[in-house]
Image (cartoon, rainbow, N blue to C red; front, side, top):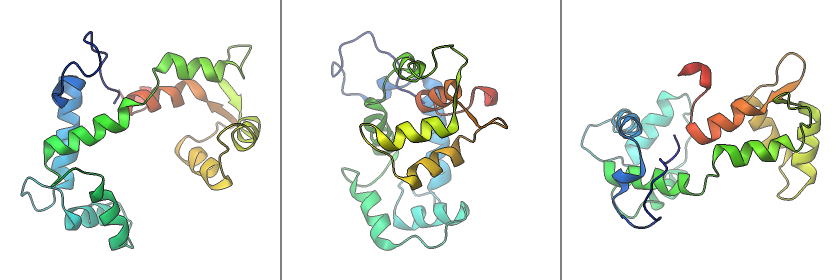
Length: 167
């Protein structure tokens, strides 16, 4: 879910609802409602703990939950929730920019990169990934049977929040 491209200058409107398409706002509202386990209109520590438990993660510490809640400017109602996502997505590069970065490693334009090569580059260049980060990426974006990463789909997910096939 990437912020919609506004024709206004950035910062021209402080209304967070202007940052997203109506369909995106609806998706965020559904996510908020799922997380607001006690249905009081706010996401608190117990709601986060219950959400993690529903996802199968039972050992979330209070420090981790406190850290998450500290990212908010106050109590987490839907507007604060949406603002937090807007701030997180604000720095996301456009899909075309990310694709162009991957295309440097794909001169034939196949749309895939060899998994072992991308792992090497991620762990040895610029902001180096750790082994754990690379493993996590390949868990979320598995290599195909030939050991290739579909970077076009990866870019789409980074900028839109879901697989093309799921739309």
